[in-house]
Image (cartoon, rainbow, N blue to C red):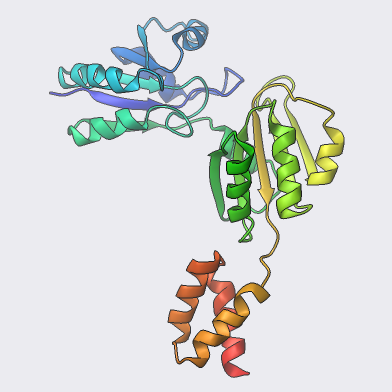
Length: 271
Protein backbone atom coordinates (compact mmCIF):
# COMPACT_ATOMS: atom_id res chain seq x y z
CA UNK A 1 0.00 0.00 0.00
CA UNK A 2 1.08 3.56 -0.69
CA UNK A 3 2.09 5.76 2.19
CA UNK A 4 0.41 8.97 3.33
CA UNK A 5 1.55 12.54 2.76
CA UNK A 6 0.89 14.60 5.88
CA UNK A 7 0.84 18.40 5.53
CA UNK A 8 1.92 19.49 9.01
CA UNK A 9 1.62 23.02 10.40
CA UNK A 10 4.46 24.03 12.72
CA UNK A 11 4.93 27.05 15.04
CA UNK A 12 5.41 30.51 13.51
CA UNK A 13 7.51 31.64 16.47
CA UNK A 14 6.64 30.26 19.88
CA UNK A 15 7.66 26.60 19.84
CA UNK A 16 4.84 25.70 22.21
CA UNK A 17 2.32 26.49 19.46
CA UNK A 18 2.26 22.98 18.05
CA UNK A 19 -0.56 20.48 18.40
CA UNK A 20 -0.31 17.09 20.05
CA UNK A 21 -1.39 15.54 16.76
CA UNK A 22 1.42 17.32 14.87
CA UNK A 23 4.04 16.04 17.33
CA UNK A 24 2.69 12.50 17.02
CA UNK A 25 2.70 12.72 13.22
CA UNK A 26 6.28 14.02 13.04
CA UNK A 27 7.46 11.25 15.37
CA UNK A 28 5.75 8.44 13.50
CA UNK A 29 6.54 9.59 9.94
CA UNK A 30 9.27 7.79 8.01
CA UNK A 31 10.61 11.06 6.62
CA UNK A 32 10.11 14.81 7.05
CA UNK A 33 10.28 16.98 3.92
CA UNK A 34 11.37 20.41 5.17
CA UNK A 35 11.83 23.78 3.45
CA UNK A 36 15.07 24.28 5.42
CA UNK A 37 16.34 21.24 7.30
CA UNK A 38 18.56 23.38 9.53
CA UNK A 39 15.57 25.39 10.70
CA UNK A 40 13.40 22.30 11.17
CA UNK A 41 16.15 20.50 13.13
CA UNK A 42 15.81 23.11 15.89
CA UNK A 43 12.14 22.26 16.27
CA UNK A 44 12.80 18.52 16.15
CA UNK A 45 15.47 18.80 18.85
CA UNK A 46 13.09 20.86 21.00
CA UNK A 47 10.45 18.14 20.63
CA UNK A 48 12.92 15.25 21.00
CA UNK A 49 11.99 13.88 17.57
CA UNK A 50 14.55 11.73 15.74
CA UNK A 51 12.75 11.35 12.38
CA UNK A 52 15.16 12.02 9.48
CA UNK A 53 14.58 15.16 7.40
CA UNK A 54 15.27 15.99 3.77
CA UNK A 55 15.18 19.37 2.04
CA UNK A 56 12.23 20.32 -0.15
CA UNK A 57 12.11 23.94 -1.31
CA UNK A 58 11.32 26.10 -4.35
CA UNK A 59 14.74 25.50 -5.94
CA UNK A 60 14.60 21.70 -5.91
CA UNK A 61 10.90 20.91 -5.73
CA UNK A 62 10.57 19.68 -9.33
CA UNK A 63 13.27 17.03 -8.97
CA UNK A 64 12.57 16.29 -5.29
CA UNK A 65 8.84 15.82 -5.86
CA UNK A 66 9.48 12.76 -8.02
CA UNK A 67 11.79 11.31 -5.39
CA UNK A 68 9.26 11.84 -2.61
CA UNK A 69 6.37 10.49 -4.69
CA UNK A 70 8.44 7.34 -5.30
CA UNK A 71 8.96 6.88 -1.56
CA UNK A 72 5.24 7.40 -0.93
CA UNK A 73 4.41 4.78 -3.57
CA UNK A 74 6.76 2.40 -1.75
CA UNK A 75 4.67 2.79 1.41
CA UNK A 76 6.66 5.45 3.25
CA UNK A 77 4.75 8.08 5.25
CA UNK A 78 6.09 11.60 4.71
CA UNK A 79 5.41 14.74 6.75
CA UNK A 80 5.67 17.99 4.75
CA UNK A 81 6.63 21.07 6.80
CA UNK A 82 7.65 24.63 6.05
CA UNK A 83 9.97 26.89 8.03
CA UNK A 84 7.03 28.29 9.99
CA UNK A 85 3.27 27.94 9.90
CA UNK A 86 1.14 26.01 7.46
CA UNK A 87 2.80 24.51 4.35
CA UNK A 88 1.55 25.47 0.88
CA UNK A 89 0.29 28.91 2.03
CA UNK A 90 2.70 31.29 0.25
CA UNK A 91 5.30 28.53 0.66
CA UNK A 92 6.61 25.65 -1.44
CA UNK A 93 4.66 22.42 -1.23
CA UNK A 94 1.53 22.68 -3.32
CA UNK A 95 3.23 20.97 -6.29
CA UNK A 96 4.05 17.95 -4.14
CA UNK A 97 0.49 17.85 -2.81
CA UNK A 98 -0.89 18.12 -6.35
CA UNK A 99 1.35 15.34 -7.68
CA UNK A 100 0.59 13.10 -4.72
CA UNK A 101 -3.16 13.51 -5.10
CA UNK A 102 -2.91 12.91 -8.87
CA UNK A 103 -0.97 9.71 -8.13
CA UNK A 104 -3.78 8.50 -5.87
CA UNK A 105 -1.77 9.02 -2.70
CA UNK A 106 -3.72 10.06 0.38
CA UNK A 107 -3.00 13.62 1.58
CA UNK A 108 -3.85 14.47 5.19
CA UNK A 109 -3.70 18.01 6.62
CA UNK A 110 -2.52 18.44 10.22
CA UNK A 111 -3.76 22.00 10.98
CA UNK A 112 -2.11 24.46 13.30
CA UNK A 113 -0.37 27.83 13.38
CA UNK A 114 -0.69 30.34 10.54
CA UNK A 115 0.51 33.96 10.51
CA UNK A 116 -2.43 34.88 8.30
CA UNK A 117 -5.19 33.79 10.70
CA UNK A 118 -3.24 34.78 13.82
CA UNK A 119 -2.84 38.35 12.58
CA UNK A 120 -6.43 38.58 11.35
CA UNK A 121 -7.88 37.33 14.63
CA UNK A 122 -6.19 40.13 16.60
CA UNK A 123 -6.45 42.88 13.97
CA UNK A 124 -9.81 44.33 14.92
CA UNK A 125 -10.70 44.67 11.22
CA UNK A 126 -13.79 43.02 9.68
CA UNK A 127 -13.08 39.33 9.22
CA UNK A 128 -16.39 37.85 8.03
CA UNK A 129 -14.91 37.95 4.53
CA UNK A 130 -11.29 38.53 3.55
CA UNK A 131 -8.83 38.01 0.72
CA UNK A 132 -5.33 36.65 1.21
CA UNK A 133 -2.88 38.11 -1.32
CA UNK A 134 0.39 36.72 0.06
CA UNK A 135 3.52 38.56 -1.09
CA UNK A 136 2.88 41.32 -3.64
CA UNK A 137 5.39 41.82 -6.50
CA UNK A 138 8.74 43.28 -5.46
CA UNK A 139 8.88 45.72 -8.39
CA UNK A 140 6.97 48.89 -7.59
CA UNK A 141 5.15 49.13 -10.92
CA UNK A 142 3.74 45.61 -10.66
CA UNK A 143 2.96 46.08 -6.97
CA UNK A 144 1.06 49.33 -7.59
CA UNK A 145 -0.95 47.67 -10.34
CA UNK A 146 -2.15 44.99 -7.91
CA UNK A 147 -2.94 47.60 -5.26
CA UNK A 148 -4.98 49.60 -7.80
CA UNK A 149 -7.05 46.50 -8.55
CA UNK A 150 -7.52 45.85 -4.83
CA UNK A 151 -8.79 49.41 -4.30
CA UNK A 152 -11.77 48.80 -6.59
CA UNK A 153 -13.74 47.00 -3.90
CA UNK A 154 -14.36 47.33 -0.21
CA UNK A 155 -12.63 44.40 1.45
CA UNK A 156 -10.24 43.17 4.11
CA UNK A 157 -6.92 42.10 2.59
CA UNK A 158 -4.08 40.14 4.18
CA UNK A 159 -0.53 40.56 2.83
CA UNK A 160 2.88 39.18 3.71
CA UNK A 161 5.84 41.51 3.29
CA UNK A 162 9.58 41.69 3.85
CA UNK A 163 10.43 43.96 6.80
CA UNK A 164 12.75 45.93 4.50
CA UNK A 165 9.95 46.67 2.02
CA UNK A 166 7.12 47.35 4.45
CA UNK A 167 7.46 51.15 4.47
CA UNK A 168 7.52 51.24 0.64
CA UNK A 169 4.39 49.09 0.57
CA UNK A 170 2.57 51.36 3.05
CA UNK A 171 3.46 54.49 1.06
CA UNK A 172 2.09 52.88 -2.11
CA UNK A 173 -1.10 51.89 -0.26
CA UNK A 174 -1.59 55.45 1.04
CA UNK A 175 -1.08 56.99 -2.40
CA UNK A 176 -3.35 54.56 -4.24
CA UNK A 177 -6.05 53.77 -1.65
CA UNK A 178 -5.97 56.82 0.56
CA UNK A 179 -5.62 56.88 4.35
CA UNK A 180 -7.30 53.49 4.91
CA UNK A 181 -7.33 51.52 8.15
CA UNK A 182 -4.42 49.15 8.48
CA UNK A 183 -2.70 46.81 10.93
CA UNK A 184 0.96 45.86 10.71
CA UNK A 185 1.73 42.73 12.75
CA UNK A 186 5.32 41.65 13.25
CA UNK A 187 7.14 38.93 15.17
CA UNK A 188 3.86 37.10 15.80
CA UNK A 189 3.90 34.78 18.86
CA UNK A 190 7.50 35.80 19.65
CA UNK A 191 8.90 37.84 22.57
CA UNK A 192 8.74 41.13 20.65
CA UNK A 193 5.32 40.60 19.07
CA UNK A 194 3.80 43.92 18.03
CA UNK A 195 0.58 45.17 16.44
CA UNK A 196 0.69 48.68 14.94
CA UNK A 197 -2.88 49.84 14.27
CA UNK A 198 -4.40 52.96 12.73
CA UNK A 199 -4.71 54.69 9.40
CA UNK A 200 -1.80 54.31 6.98
CA UNK A 201 -0.45 57.76 7.83
CA UNK A 202 -0.65 57.01 11.56
CA UNK A 203 1.14 53.69 11.16
CA UNK A 204 3.83 55.26 8.96
CA UNK A 205 4.46 57.93 11.60
CA UNK A 206 5.25 55.16 14.10
CA UNK A 207 7.67 53.31 11.83
CA UNK A 208 11.02 55.09 11.58
CA UNK A 209 12.78 52.70 9.22
CA UNK A 210 13.12 49.02 8.35
CA UNK A 211 11.25 46.70 10.68
CA UNK A 212 12.65 43.50 12.13
CA UNK A 213 11.12 40.07 11.89
CA UNK A 214 8.34 38.64 9.74
CA UNK A 215 5.58 41.10 8.81
CA UNK A 216 1.89 40.57 8.11
CA UNK A 217 -0.16 43.53 6.86
CA UNK A 218 -3.95 43.66 7.11
CA UNK A 219 -5.86 46.51 5.52
CA UNK A 220 -9.44 47.52 4.89
CA UNK A 221 -10.08 49.30 1.62
CA UNK A 222 -12.67 52.07 1.56
CA UNK A 223 -16.08 51.88 -0.05
CA UNK A 224 -15.87 51.88 -3.84
CA UNK A 225 -17.02 55.01 -5.63
CA UNK A 226 -20.62 54.17 -6.51
CA UNK A 227 -20.81 56.78 -9.27
CA UNK A 228 -18.32 54.74 -11.26
CA UNK A 229 -20.86 51.97 -11.83
CA UNK A 230 -24.25 53.66 -11.28
CA UNK A 231 -24.39 55.05 -14.80
CA UNK A 232 -23.53 51.68 -16.33
CA UNK A 233 -26.06 49.95 -14.08
CA UNK A 234 -28.82 52.40 -15.00
CA UNK A 235 -27.99 51.99 -18.68
CA UNK A 236 -28.36 48.20 -18.46
CA UNK A 237 -31.71 48.50 -16.69
CA UNK A 238 -33.01 50.99 -19.29
CA UNK A 239 -31.95 48.60 -22.05
CA UNK A 240 -34.23 45.94 -20.54
CA UNK A 241 -31.73 43.77 -18.65
CA UNK A 242 -33.17 41.97 -15.65
CA UNK A 243 -31.99 43.11 -12.22
CA UNK A 244 -30.26 39.75 -11.75
CA UNK A 245 -28.35 39.99 -15.05
CA UNK A 246 -27.44 43.63 -14.46
CA UNK A 247 -26.15 42.83 -10.97
CA UNK A 248 -24.02 39.95 -12.27
CA UNK A 249 -22.47 42.09 -15.00
CA UNK A 250 -21.72 45.13 -12.83
CA UNK A 251 -20.43 43.08 -9.90
CA UNK A 252 -18.02 41.23 -12.18
CA UNK A 253 -16.88 44.30 -14.16
CA UNK A 254 -16.42 46.68 -11.22
CA UNK A 255 -15.42 44.32 -8.39
CA UNK A 256 -18.35 45.40 -6.19
CA UNK A 257 -20.35 43.03 -3.98
CA UNK A 258 -23.56 41.70 -5.54
CA UNK A 259 -25.58 42.78 -2.49
CA UNK A 260 -24.47 46.40 -2.86
CA UNK A 261 -25.21 46.42 -6.60
CA UNK A 262 -28.58 44.71 -6.05
CA UNK A 263 -29.65 47.29 -3.47
CA UNK A 264 -28.65 50.08 -5.86
CA UNK A 265 -30.41 48.38 -8.81
CA UNK A 266 -33.69 48.11 -6.90
CA UNK A 267 -33.56 51.81 -6.07
CA UNK A 268 -32.79 52.76 -9.68
CA UNK A 269 -35.47 50.47 -11.11
CA UNK A 270 -38.15 51.89 -8.81
CA UNK A 271 -37.17 55.53 -9.33
